Length: 133
Image (cartoon, rainbow, N blue to C red; front, side, top):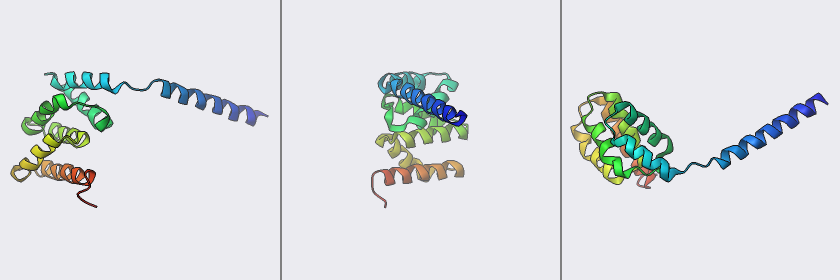
């Protein structure tokens, strides 16, 4: 009897949790607008947090209005960790213009870690668009 009560309780809790998650659907349009504001901010911590969200949600968010800001971080930041984060955001966004910048910059990059990541971004882009099997 105790086992049935435990199983029933688990079932009811799981049902309510799944109902709660589906009722809290993310409004990606509003979320995207806020991410664009954060990416255009001068606050580096806010930019980092926004890029992490872009990486997490990828093409679900539209932050094309701030793509220049992300590319600027990738190209000009002196800290390779921030540059890697920006490259990951570019990879997640799959923005054609930004990937084109990465492709043009590839042969001129001196940092081996950044160059490897650039190669990974370019490979992912080619696979995403069916250039590679």
